[in-house]
Length: 148
Image (cartoon, rainbow, N blue to C red; front, side):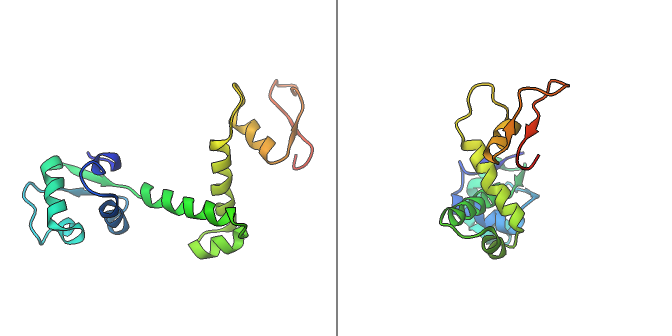
């Protein structure tokens, strides 16, 4: 089974994006000798299909949506960075405002400089403006303040 990073070694990013747009979330069989009538050859060209068959002939390839989703999320973060409200960005991409906020918040959490030993939930609470007591009865951090 071939995955996205293996496909990018053989075909270009634009050709992979074209495949993902049409066949996202499916497995496709790569024939040993592709013809112009094969769906992949019609979509990305016969030369690219021959390159794929030279590398992955007789094996299925998994075409995921991850490249498209990453590009969409980067565009959403860029628009939010320019100050557009989540409602406007969500309408443009066919999402909910909450999903847009979660995409941007997840980016902040993953790119924040985490001090050693600081857990993701605590970091998320600090980014949301919650304050933490030392420990509650069960020994787990207990949120206090706004939103608790």
